[in-house]
Image (cartoon, rainbow, N blue to C red; front, side):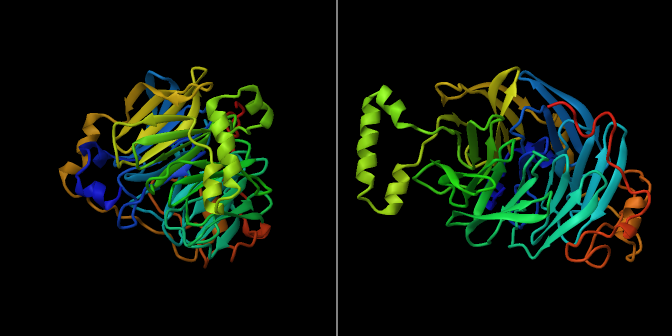
Length: 464
């Protein structure tokens, strides 16, 4: 939340609600004015998976949202308080949690067994975590750590990356390519696309003139959408080529803060939310000359006139005239709040999901043929009234965390047996322990019995 939101007081329910996510496919973290995690963070998957994760002052909850009118809580975890990041690996039992109380530590849980698989500490605060069936990526402000998710072996550390205070990055959920996108510059809208499977840079994309604000891949990892801090233009690029495919104009009158971008499962639509009251849905389609000739409408005629005239106009004006507008929109009842959106299929129909910092999940119907204004069909509260008063009971007692000896190696860490959740801090990879500067950890340094995240029945998930 920004300073203006906090000065207005905001809904009382925000005091018990910290983060929300639909699986792990798309992540965006809201930061407070002091750079710490704000009242609300949210992540939403663009796929058809039905897991909603919510972090609160007391822990986290996992919900099932397979039906529009039903939101079932399938698990409540109380291992860590003040959860600011919660990421579930598709529909498996693997959940990654980061707490505001210990922002440098990542905890990995098997929630169905009620056990902590492992936890790792890093050299700075964890800003975001991304997962697919091959890789787990941890993003700090100036470095990125890439783990093999099967045994949590650290494969690569990208050091001295451009300053990234929001932890902006995107990981393709297609583990066949595992493309990772992150800012290539702190002052320009440059995107670095990295192959997290082969551990090599794929391409650099000059996407925007201003710094990046949002990134997301489609389900197959063949398209990458981006928006800058200005928030007026959204672009879609091919991956790995880095060629511009589409360009959409969200608005012209004002700059906005883009909160999220999300593709539909078939990559035919792209939705964008911001700190305004409007959520936009864009349609990814190429306009062929034959289609225009078959339907000679007045708007098509005017469009041709503008296209012809644009060749005589400055490049900036010409580009603006070639940008597509929104196919469908949603008008929210709130203004100035952070919102995260996603396109999903629920009960075999296309829906737009909006998680708002007012503490609610909104579900809208989407007309894939005609677009237009989307209709609200359901509103869900993401926590009960008792949690709203959590912080009104006074200051919390700081949590004392015991530490292991500083010289403990990465190999010794992962070989340790599972411990009761949050009972100790196990030191993970750091610059003075384990491999240095992103080199692959030697096999002799890896213990004989490393932690194994493989679940015979659930990991990797076999259902699509």
